[in-house]
Image (cartoon, rainbow, N blue to C red):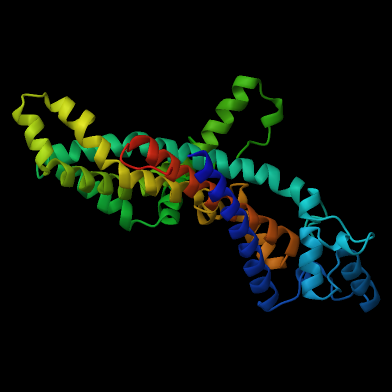
Length: 332
């Protein structure tokens, strides 16, 4: 297993490197000029050229990419530091290092999506099992109807509806954001409650949408396993329904879901981008929108890099977890 993980990590590094090349190429091929949204048309051309020189945007694209990686120092001692030196560049939009801009937004996005992913799995898996055991009965029909509604209802529409009901007509919850204006005046417990109140609506929207699909998948997998011969044999031997379901059937039914978990982890970074924009949530969704509008090269490249890293780690984690839950799989 150790050798397999090392091989996958090395392959992941190559994959991330190729992803940065593709991202940079698409960014350069897209219309518009980097930082154009931040330039006042009343500014002189000399000032604009000076800003480009300071940002390194006056150099050829290949040299810009190598400087972003930090490889320019191999032949030029005065070349700017880059990714290999721990520097992801300077944001044109925010006039700050990219790391300082991304850190709080990334933390907010990961907190929201990790909570949503955890709640989804804690609820969807038992509901899928319950629906499969009670196939075609009233509980199964109710859960199926709720799942179909969740899969067909757009997340942004549900978010707007919840805002109207719980932040407009009945102002029980805050209308958006992550913190209240007087957040810094609250006690530690008050700050936690303030965070929790702001997370209610986005969590409900994310969990309801993801719960629908995952519950249907877990139900289908469980039904398929329950029809297998070894389940019939286990029941014929007199095992209880609980042992048949949770000890024998679930271990095989959960395998496809573990693979799905890897992709869901990789999607944590951008899965709630539209929802963050609708709810004015200070996460990576809003930040990426602002970066793309301004064509903030350093900020966009850093965002794509984080997405690539999470994709590699998510797939690797899913494969390791799959080998742990299924003894038939070996990566020796």
